[in-house]
Length: 116
Image 1 (cartoon, rainbow, N blue to C red):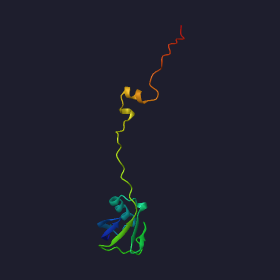
Image 2 (image 1 turned 60 degrees about the vertical axis):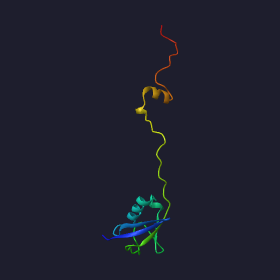
Image 3 (image 1 turned 90 degrees about the vertical axis):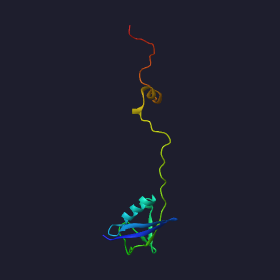
Image 4 (image 1 turned 135 degrees about the vertical axis):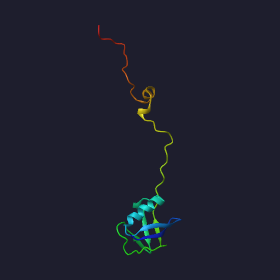
């Protein structure tokens, strides 16, 4: 297990001292970068010295301490909280249920009695 600390340049940000275990595949590094930048792994493109790093192997890339990698990719927006609280049917009172449901409970009395 060889661990090195690298720098990752992404857009105008520089992520310093990202610890990478070179015995693990590059997909682990991409997962680390996802947690730091919110860029999904399928959108990440990592380059060093004109070579791109794939998901399976490091290839001919030799990672050393202080090496700067270039990452390209766009981040997902952070999901927003709902503006109003979600109300479930189980939490409603009978009056609220009757108001919100399309068909209120019970039968309508038509006033016709067929039994004599």
